[in-house]
Image 1 (tube, one colour):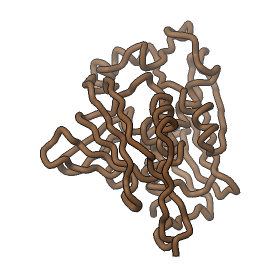
Image 2 (image 1 turned 45 degrees about the vertical axis):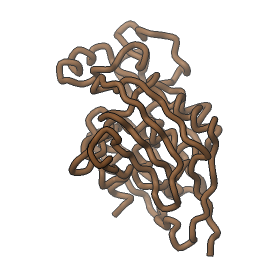
Image 3 (image 1 turned 135 degrees about the vertical axis):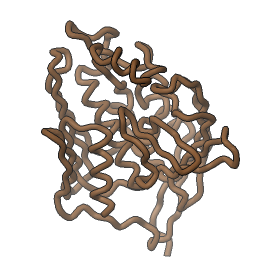
Image 4 (image 1 turned 90 degrees about the horizontal axis):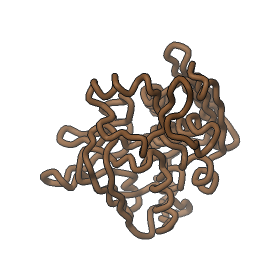
Length: 278
């Protein structure tokens, strides 16, 4: 019996830009997929076009971004694109990329979301026995120091995040939003990635943020933001929700729950995905 709808895209679209950490320019083509295929990447620049499922088992690294891979292909900084697809309710999609890292664009998910909204969603009928049935029936949590990520049984899917930085311009911020494509597009997707001025040189020396600039990240110094204005007064914590949605998408679907995080990052996000998957 077919009684459940999931979604793909009505048509494909493409975006090009520079990768945050590699500094390499790539083009991404996001294309409709068939029922049961889920979200997956295809490295079209490599021999035999290897596929990389956007799933937990593909995670290779969570150092300052989420990197997926198989034995013969990798793709880095996937979280903003995956957050856009998940936040806009796209379950099955083929993502062709001609390089090692998803372009950062303006540092947010806004360009991805606008492209998804432009082409629209296409419902797919899924046999009821193929619908994921994992439910959050008890609290689950992972912790490292005073940072944690948790999932609680809830009557709706909600994301709440807290951050706490010593620099006054960021300070302590909390934000919460209920999962809904319109709210995601308006309140979460435009929030850009951020960093501290004091960390920039160290990250660059470590071979990271080779493609980072004031055009694709907001940078905070001791006396304030280097490239204002912010899109929201609490743009940093909204971006952390964006990252969380992208990392939780590695479940393949989002179980209904209230997801709560504080002073966390990609590593803890993925650890919660592991807990839910057990």
